[in-house]
Image: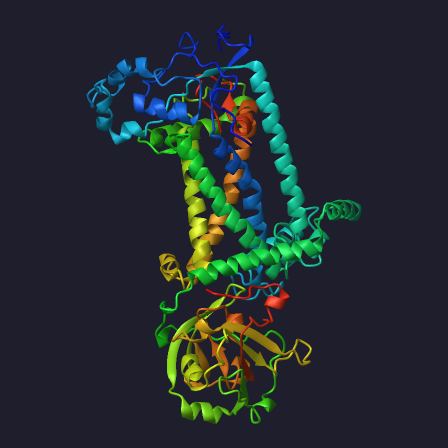
Length: 365
Length: 268
């Protein structure tokens, strides 16, 4: 819909010669209000129109003295008067103009409604469409929309652009100086194992090593959990972990700061991202389904980002990512990869397991 | 209504008297709210499905732990034509939401509608400011007794019609009556609350102060859920009263003017 009342478009510029059949019932506005109304509604009523009513105003509203008529008196109009609802002032318009505008506005209304409905259908997941309408109607709408370019492939691209936009907002909101809220140990809530597939067995733990690549030294490092525990100071922190599904838990984590690790094993110049992999992750059927996440280095350097080795004061159990997991409390839970087997510093943003499945890539909270 | 056909010096001979009603931006944002709120609710339900906030211990028969799923189970069992459904617990999510197991799709669509909803809210505020429409929405002292009179009127209007008794509309000397004003004044506030609780959930770390305003993360989820229910509930009397009030009221929200002059009563 468009501006309906456009000034000077077939509108008689004179106010009605008489104050119209329906005389104002209420004491009308002070000139200040009349100005605002006539400008906003762009009616033909000239600013002087409400003026005669001004004389009647004190009769209804005895407390404030009648405003003097000189222009500087505007300053003395009380706030209540300024905010008083303006009288509805009828204006006269040629019937042909009204008809033309009605036609235009209703056509735009109909076009908007049709476009909204069509867009809605296009954006629905395929599985959801199966629950609505009849098969014939579904196919007819789908093929019609596909001919107009609104096909499922475009829909995915569109949805991912929305995600990128939202990720950009999240990145703009991020501040390296902002610390994540910490809790006391008495506020800890029960942990929840949300392994994407089946929880791996403990067989991998004895032979576990962490492979680190993309280092400034050009070397590839292989570290054991004993190396990590011996070399880095231990940090404890009680923070909330937020799952993309909507639940959250408070847990007491312990481990080394990712920032300390980055200082000890500095990335090659130009590296802006870390890719963390878990080779031991399984799918629901128990087959290997490696998990991988991308982490921007500013997040990795945040003082509350841990490479966690402990939970509730004890070494991590298998279901929570023994022997080493990421704990980035300013990211959604799905970034907090369990059982990390390798860290690689890279210049280009690496792939991310859940981003490949339609979720955010940045996941900033 | 006196048929005053005032002959002015204008070119068109046939002239009609109309009252300008709603600013173009107010009309635009009003109608944009329909697909936007619908989109937010249907995707929001599918997000809610992934981790319901209102839960109880598992039901012995249905094994459901989710009150919203319980409503679906009840509907499939008791409402003719609703079933049979393969997944009664998913009835609400499948019929009113965009389905179960659609979290990633629902999240992306929810962000899309949410950003548009916020932009639309700004358009609405701009339209209210430019058209002075906000003045008709501001609460006033006379609202309390008038609200009682209007409630009495609405409660009695159908029985009076049935008994063929006269049931005059209380005089309303304003664009809206007190009940309408209360509802229309509350809507933008609910919108703000929906946006605030939404951001509190979306960015609880960077906007930690916002999360704290709702006590904690679950507080924001609970507020967000009930604001959705309130917005959806508002639609029912809103639509019924517009139908009851007639064509002129509906049309005025599309074209921006009304042919009801002076008779300030009963617009919904």
